[in-house]
Length: 362
Ligand SMILES: *Cc1c(COP(=O)(O)O)cnc(C)c1O
Image 1 (cartoon, protein in one colour):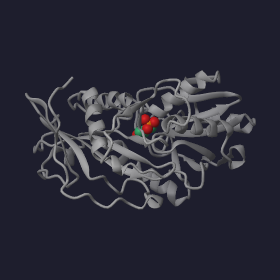
Image 2 (image 1 turned 90 degrees about the vertical axis):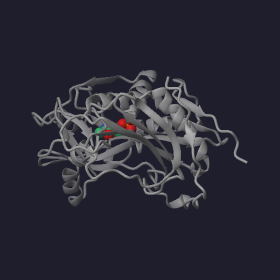
Image 3 (image 1 turned 180 degrees about the vertical axis):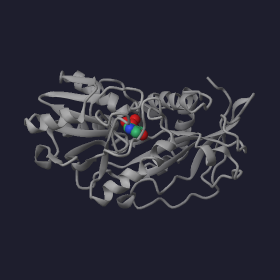
């Protein structure tokens, strides 16, 4: 493991903490951030915690031109007895390195990154919101900083972690959403960057999302980019369907993101002896199941919402309402179980949570 000491420079003043009833998502940031740099020939160096502040880059920095960047999304949770939990953080660092590999960004030391994150959380511990269902959203990311307009992997990078206190995703309780099946645009294709958490995937998804929003759908269901037949993801979440007692999710085919929540849901279903399969699933099969009255539930999975039940699909000319537009039993049980494990209110049979050691403040 990388052994360089993390230099800590504390902010001179602490900003006022936000109103916890109105946190929203991703607009408020804590007092500090973590940074380290990469230089070709030297590797990653100068790990440091510094006050949250704007950074300076050359206008020619490669990130601005060719999008060589990756990110992660994870959360820290405060338990009732004031302990701080992370949920499977090693999976996020593993995935960050998988994204790095795809984007030709040098690997980071995942264990060191988790140590750095724990230290950053300790420094900003008072920013972890305490209200029910709130958490501290964590955004690690890497950008290519070399000032160069040539198209090639950069020789310099910066790795950063910023953190944002976020509100309860479902203010009025977990609620189903309406989904438009996307027939024109593609999020990615086989051989593309769909498996990586990289900025370009999200930039290219905005147009379809904008059109769906105008039609009052909350997200789009992405089909495969080649045949427009097989289901891939919903919005920026993985997707599951319960058909005639069996839970089906698209197999990881090279263009689907390896969700940590997806993996956790699969493990939980197996633990409960509920049939679950990862396989190719066409939109036609889902529509047929709906026509036969066998489409019991559908839901998206991701760190932000955990479980996002789907109440309605619109595909070509067909409107499919699921479970009378109400949250299904399984969706609710998965949501309650995963959030229960994350907040330490129920047993964690998989050792998914790790505790962040916090030296008691003052
Ligand atoms: C982050 C993300 C997910 C969900 O991954 P989690 O690890 O469960 O948060 C799914 N799909 C896409 C495209 C994503 O970016």
